[in-house]
Image: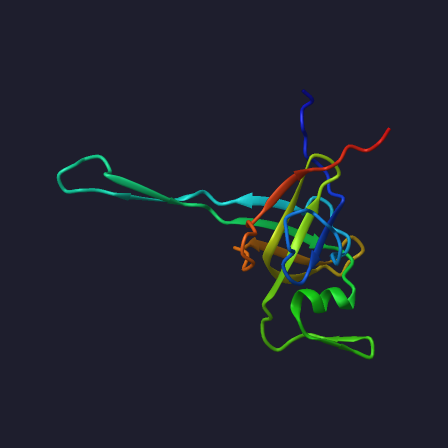
Length: 170
């Protein structure tokens, strides 16, 4: 059996609204822009463990666990005005983006497609973004995005799906 290795990044796609199923269909999804090198990460917090003790016992009589939250982070290096509006809210008029006065809640369904290995689909993700710009000969304007996996509101959907990327024909 061949060893499955997940590496690289092909694209990150998103769309407003939850999909009907976790089937990795890209219909209606669009890219956020180019992802800055070495910024796309996935992490899961440690589970939260609660131990219950009785006065008469030294060992716990019950232990409960809650899963740690899953987050994805990436930076967009070529934001268009539409990308700013998509990630921050606000408006575009006459080719000028007007930043919103208040924080906008942004939720999208997201598909992360590495170059090879395992791909990820999250039906509901809360996206939190911030601008990080360096105006120099060696700097770029970046939009740093952190996506937190949320429980879907659509009955029957799971919070995340993982599948294999089809092997390229040689």
